[in-house]
Image 1 (cartoon, rainbow, N blue to C red):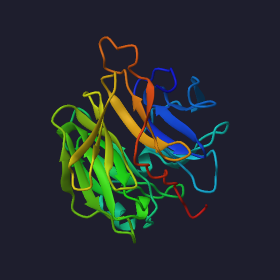
Image 2: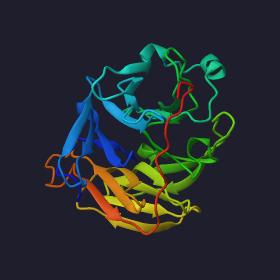
Image 3: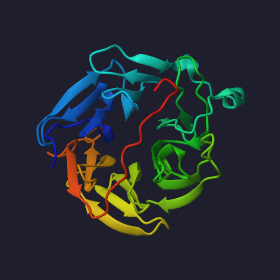
Length: 287
């Protein structure tokens, strides 16, 4: 087991600049373990809004692009957030789609509507304030992931969980502008829900399975290959890390549990045979 903190929904886990970071969504905290990863989690930054996920910014160590509340910001500990897009900048109409910034290295964000089916969407991030954010996919209730193949956001394959339906879909990605092709079913989860995901160097997909207490590895053809069982109910996020990429970190959640167990909400780690891919950085024209 990794750091002894207990997170409500611990997600957005990344390994970058030689350290692990994750978010505690409801408290708006960006966290990291000190030293060797067994110390308590330390707060790097805290926002007055839910903090959904972060990605490192290329050329700016210690700065993260963050999905926070209904906006997108650059987050550097010790400074005020630099907002790239707020609620008014999130436009989901066709005109916004045609006008959006066409860059292949844009992160994608998910908007969840857990009580209403088919209203989630995936949104690419702009690289300048007031750039429009455009819808690239919809009809999803609770989107999770995404995870990309070896080439990251400029690659050819993206995996996306539709958690409420228990589905993982696979999409082709146009390397010129990041547009998605038609999605196809990659895997179906009948016990629990697919949540956070990552792809390893062999092209296999690891996904946390919320409600089942498992992390599963699927081969590129969708065949189940490995199951890691955890002493918790709600695994939420996964990422490879460590000096050699052979450590798989897993965040979990205690939110929604009537009687949380002693380890629900902890962060775990396990050694795996196949190393994972490095965390892709957000790149803008400014960097």
